[in-house]
Length: 366
Image (cartoon, rainbow, N blue to C red; front, side):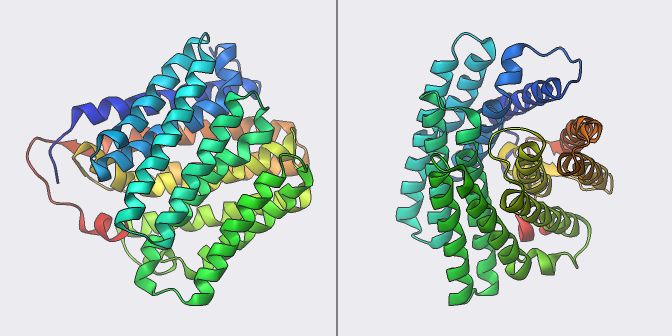
């Protein structure tokens, strides 16, 4: 493994700082008395998508591709976050995030030429959805109308990565047809929901199809029988698939189109339960790979995973049942679980200038 790379740490730290400020803004929105500027409350979603997810995913691709075009993506997202947080240049920040997403599309064009596969095309589709979401936000569309485009960026990225790993299981034509159908249904329904909000019911169906695909064919069903980090990663993934299905059910039956408890429940079952479940599982592999560090796994990793699951049950249950106090406390413990995750991850990395051997379990599970 490469030695410690401090320049990469600066970009990753910028993404993590944006994450914390977005969390503070989100908790202030839920009624907690925190030192949050009004801009942070309004920008809770955009900061997470452009500043955190965009920076981390862009940084991961830049490390893999090693090109100037690729490095421009996390640089633009990080700079856009700084501008957005000033409260005086949100339009410029939005434009920078549009440019970053277009840059990520360019990265995937290069990768597709090298490796024209379905999983790479799926991740490229996610970059396109991110660009559409960023552009519609730049044009002034309200967040509830565009947030599912942003969700599509993360969902298609994750699904593409899982399909890539599932090559080991030699997917059948039925497996691939199911996968492609779910991706297309999601994309078409999200586009239709811009004019017909009830199309989100179809989005819910697509999420249920994805969850069923993952539950049936994902390699995590096998790696859960492993040990230590291998088992932890599989548990993060499998729990995330459950929350993906929960989000699909809420969209299908709950009509959470604009705002309110069901809107909050559907979004956060997806973004926190599914997406952060993936992040919790992959961070012990991806972050050390980006920074050139060695990672030491321990049982304390289960603390933030357990806290996330319990707090989601409280928050999503409060949203479905209409109990505001559950939602409020659940949101607080959501934030604490993510904070604990960052602390555990950072303190589990060991930095040195010398080369280190990659952990065998991490290599097997990415």
